[in-house]
Image (cartoon, rainbow, N blue to C red; front, side):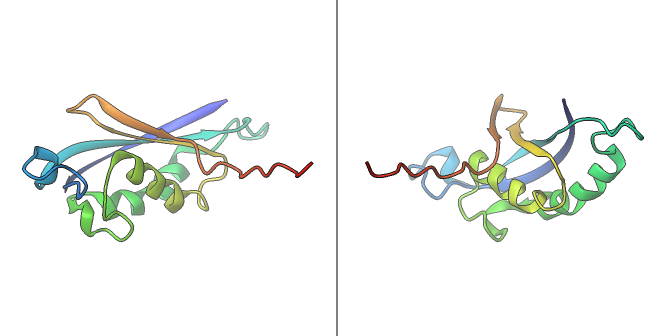
Amino acid sequence: MQIYKDFLFEAAHYLPTAAPGTANARIHGHSFRARIVVEGEPNPETGYIFHFDELAKAMVETQDALDHRLLNEVDGLASPTLETIAVWIWHRLSNRIPGLAQVQVSRDSCGEGCIYTGPRATTRLAAE
């Protein structure tokens, strides 16, 4: 079972890897939505997977670090693509939210988004 909570942030950014002269190479802003998804089974005593009030408390510092900022100046977001932002949020929240399953980041005005499900375990093949 999964629950989720969204937070919104307004921020500016530019993409250093964008072609010169294109809109993405210039500073521009977006309304972003981050959705934090938590997976687990409800506690038999409380009925909650994770209490929404506690989830909100865990997210507030991350929201503040992004809201009304130039994302390129946020430590770890020099190239603030949706993918980079999703991974950055994951790393900020993974030690605060047991059962973190997904971080989704979207730009409402563009109809675009990214879903990150955490780092993949590295698999090594045994030499035969």
